[in-house]
Length: 342
Image 1 (cartoon, rainbow, N blue to C red):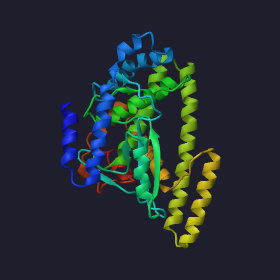
Image 2: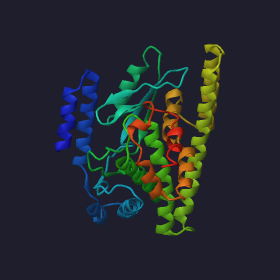
Image 3: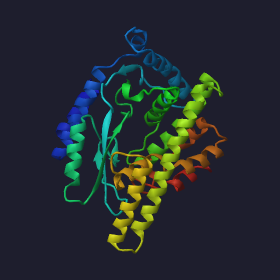
Image 4: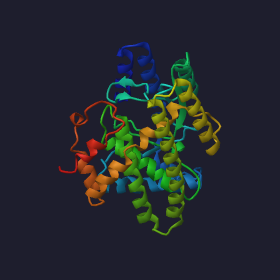
């Protein structure tokens, strides 16, 4: 409660009406989420809890313990459960210039600059997105997110939006818990792409290792999650290729009309290919780019750490904000590669 009051105080003293309103809705949304959380153990024992929810929640303590044994920070997170009764934990708003991958960024205490905003209310997210889109000077995207990290400010509960059906459900829940636990372990303000890429890389590796230890290498859980993760990785790789192609077009000397034409053509292809109901734009592509852009560099560091995630975390912990030559670096490969000699 003290931390919620601190966030509310920041909201009331923040410069700018929008910043105050945004932090205010964050404080209220977080309070409601925490207030409705129940101890994980009681939810698991409750006969009214669906069996699959009981099964998945019963695995969470082991997921956490495994992550901590590999170097993640021990926390009180994920000891409680909140049923949100909605499709997403938050709705994320992103904006970007229409003919360049130059995103709009916001600045806040603790988190520093960020290229996205999370709203607890879907209508509020869309209303703000409409404001940003007025005039046509920005591409704006709104998407639902199943989880988020409060970076240790609050005791994050397991959310109903983190649970999924099927034998791959245990793997995706573990991936989310471990990904968000990386944020609670290491976070560099003003370096969103680095933070998300690090959490994705470590979360993916730990999930595979935990599943194999818990269920066995040849288990249905491992096979189902591996296949599902491979499909997701293929989708992300396709979106990365689209990003790279459009980035080259935007940086070229062709006319703006030609840039718009190629952009419309490529995004239409992606919509058909992925059978999407909503349109994609630069903000959409930049959002995917934020989460996985550092994979190859982290893979190189992982190899130099003898494929040991604990060692990788120890090495990354030697970084300081001064090691990043500028804020919000999209390409931070040189920063990671420079860690090798240490």
